[in-house]
Image (cartoon, rainbow, N blue to C red; front, side, top):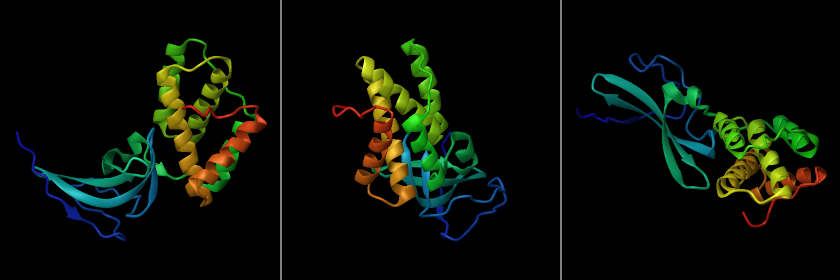
Length: 194
């Protein structure tokens, strides 16, 4: 069975409400910065409609910043996968406060911990990513992290730095120093060799 892809571009200001495409209104527009769970911040580059036989589906074309990777997200699944707007600055302050003096439980069983942390990262919630980040840093103080946990720590750091950068309109280098200042208050430091 072959699938026909017929794409048409939609203008930036259009809020689609097309019969046969789900009838929902668009929540993001071209140029919006959004967060793709577990991957970080990206930009909506295009909104298109594709036909699959007689059915139509709307898609966001999302370019992920640091990876120069593009992802097509079906509009009907955007909420289910956790696509969301960049966190507001007041929420960033709350997250930095958590990193400075918040408490997080750490499961000693690495398999259970890895599963819990994976679920938190896939939720797309920045506070949950901060919990993963802080918890893994606390473990790293005691012992070296496994390869998989090092990768997760780096992904969580990237998500935090990129959202702080965009929410506060500062460079990623400045955002990383803001992050480090909060960690310092908790006696934590980001390892240099990730």
